[in-house]
Amino acid sequence: MSIFVSARRTPQCDARVLAKDEWPVALRIAQQDPVSYILAITHINSGLVHGVDMGELWGFPAKGPVQAVCWMGANLIPIIPDPDPELRSEALISFAAMAASSNKRSSSIVGPSDLALALWRNLEGSWKSPREIRASQPSMAIASTPLIEPDPDVKVARWNDFDALLPASVHMFIEEVGVSPLSFGSAQYSMRVRELIADNRSLLRYASTLETRSGRSDEVIFKADFGAVTPDVAQVQGVWVSPEYRGRGLAAPAVATVVEHGLSTIAPTVSLYVNDYNRRAISVYRKVGFEQVGEYATVLF
Image (cartoon, rainbow, N blue to C red; front, top):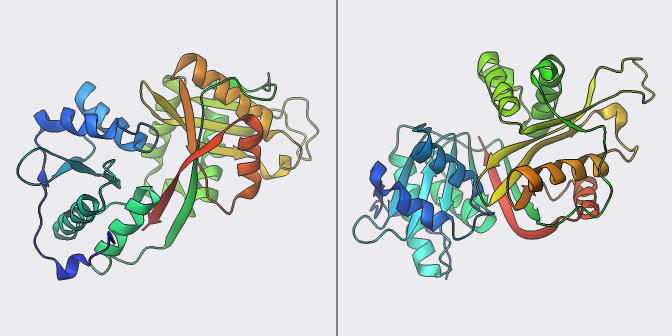
């Protein structure tokens, strides 16, 4: 059974906004697949534990026990672990109708590829056209010691690293997303970088003694963040190697250090997702010991 029915031809909506005291129900649903839904779990936990509500949760069906949920915030994330095709179809139709009628807009739809792409197809025509659709992003995970030796020069970022880390983070964001994060407000992005440093969730490597055309040893040539964290999974985001240093074999040992830090201090599983066309990055992750466990998709607006 197809999980695509146009939201424009289906005005009825069998979903509703969940009250805050229902968020634990949504959390339990998402935790059925902690790797696939780590982004949503992180948002839900922030609301429940820290009282930081960066969005809202929709539940399906509107009456009776909640069987599927959708996070609406900076990202629109469908959360439907139940494999029943009819339930998935009806939930996605309802979530698309909710999104179409909402006065809020997300910067992306992201999640397991079948759900994210089907949600967009149901929503198409109600929201503006996306600037890019990344339809296949392997979801990879590792829960054991990396297969290669870590790079001892990769370290956890501290406060005195901020001035060097910020420009590297901006370069990474531009390469990955296609726009500068500073266009959304430099203070907001700087705050995000500082938050990751404060939580010991950013790692970096300086040029140090490596040969460099600039002659500078104080520039960041590798960075990675644990952008989403739960008690079960730590998701690596923002992996970046300075263009001048690519092809030197630095990435795999550096990522191994990131994995080692994540497994020893954050969560028992480290995950990430990567664009399918980035064959070099996928090769690096496999060399470290990551295995594909699913597939994401991202619709960027």
